[in-house]
Length: 204
Image (cartoon, rainbow, N blue to C red; front, top):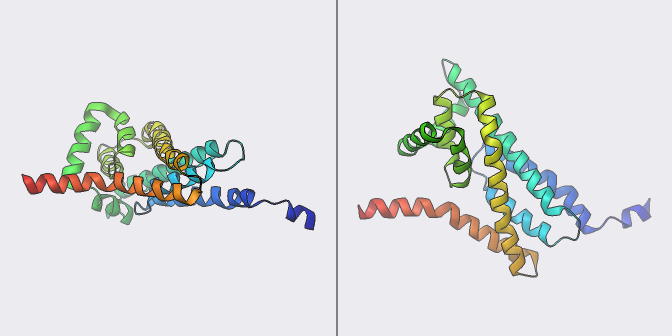
């Protein structure tokens, strides 16, 4: 038994803890949009890039995409329940609170023009997911149709942030340096649209 314990490498321990943790955090981040899920995926990709285990990056991609999909579908289902209820629900209120009127109007226009394909763009644009989800709820889109559109959205999201992590991991020998760069890039990407809108309104 001691021999088997000795054969457990730090890398295998990282995988045993890291993959379930990544899944839970991304799923929770989809339900409660305050967890920086993009930074989590990029950081996990950096660590996987420096590992010797085969398919580490592929597993990170699959875990992140699947967790994001489940979180999105769960939140949409909870939102639909709130729409059908006379008194609404705290989940529906949370979605509405994170969808400003201007962003919601834009999301509704894009949904009318492009259908469920707008879900792909909403996953890639910072703070774009919730307004589009609310627009789908207000349009009474069936859960099955939303789920079909959300599959490519989550796949595109996962590969985008994984590529950021791979870029950070390839620039430095030490994983922590790559993680720092990846987190920095994802934070810049997430903050940039908000800063740009404020600057544009200030100059208008």
